[in-house]
Image (cartoon, rainbow, N blue to C red; front, side):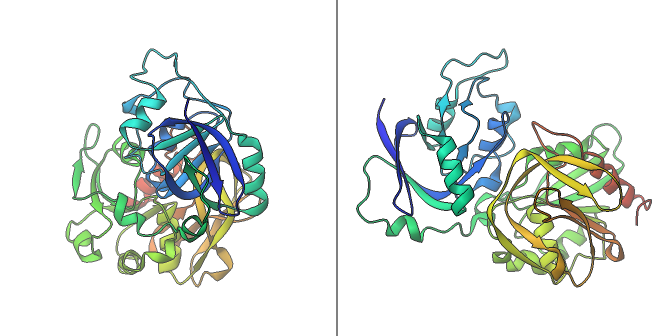
Length: 354
């Protein structure tokens, strides 16, 4: 066991032991509360630029299955209380340590993850370093910023994914860091999906004559993506549109709204979301550090809010035949409460939901 440290930007130090890659790293330290789904967390491109802290104390007990990957691993570090070196699962291909080593992600275990979570909840997210020696100068940690991450994780080129069974609709998915289950959820509903890089122009999207456009999840500060916002402006009202997570935020910015950074974000699989047009509250999976300011909207109507803190969780744009949500209806490993939103999108494409 090789000793290492987690050093926070305010100088607090937590001693632990290394696993994964034997290298140092700096990133934005965030926590996620899921009791399962660590594979999906580690392969969610929305974590690009971040060191992920798992609040659940035992991670890795069912091993790694590549079939469950949601994308390429983009985390900068991984912090757990305890990791399981002998996973028990008939599907397991290898263990968590091997996964991290192969992707050059440094990990740290044996630290007090409960105390770290308390610190982040009180202070808010902060930068941190996983390192072999405690640095005398904290400036590089303090100056770190998550920037340029959408272009770092987007698809390098378009790709086509055929519908399951008979093709009913053709959907263009703009990839800001898309999770694979967005594609699968559309395929299951008879949609052929063309995944397009974030650099695609609105004119190129429309030239493909899609029946609908999906805007994916993704990492970082939404307001940084000025090109992508401008393209969404040019798509609104021209084709049915459904946005998830970063896609939700970018659409709000394109519609004249604003976004802001949350104190410690929403990351986990048990976030309650209330539908303002009904009496239902849904349990949702979320992974975001920014939120839309619902009061800033010049058009559109807030449809969903977070039942814990009242933040905006979804917006309807009936005049543009569009809607967006902050949470993940495609969530793997769950919950699946809001999968019906993909059905709503399909109804929009055939003209049943305006």
